[in-house]
Image 1 (cartoon, helix red, strand yellow):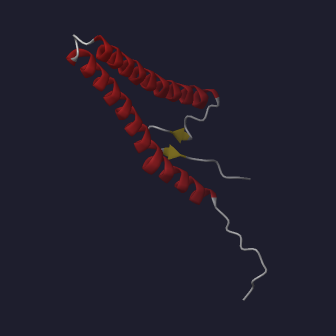
Image 2 (cartoon, helix red, strand yellow):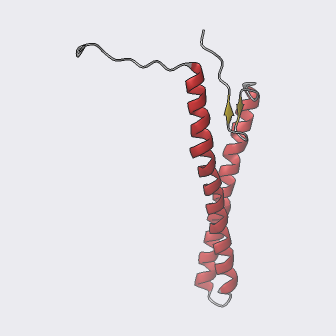
Image 3 (cartoon, rainbow, N blue to C red):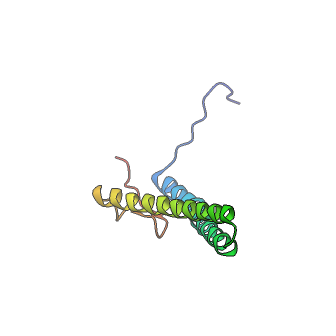
Amino acid sequence: MDLLSTKVAYATSTNLNQFITNVDSMIINPLIIFLFALALVYFLYGLFEFIANGANDEKKTTGKSHMLWGIVGLTIMMGVWAILGIILNTLNIQDQIKPEQGEVNLPSPK
């Protein structure tokens, strides 16, 4: 029994690649889809609130606010997606990282 030595776990490129792919496909992509849906529902709720309360100016203002923040949320998420595409194209790594398919192919360390 060796109690004083440090235990080290080494990760190979294949394991790291598989881990990143799993995190991307099982956590990040569903989270992005959920946030898009949430922003869209928030916008639609604001639209419904705006239309349903045509006579009440205070509730119409609240509906406008909900619509505005839903659009802001969607715009920010689309902007992040566009910036990601620009970075991938600028660094010329669009063949190695494909966010739409959830694929990451990292080069082997030398």
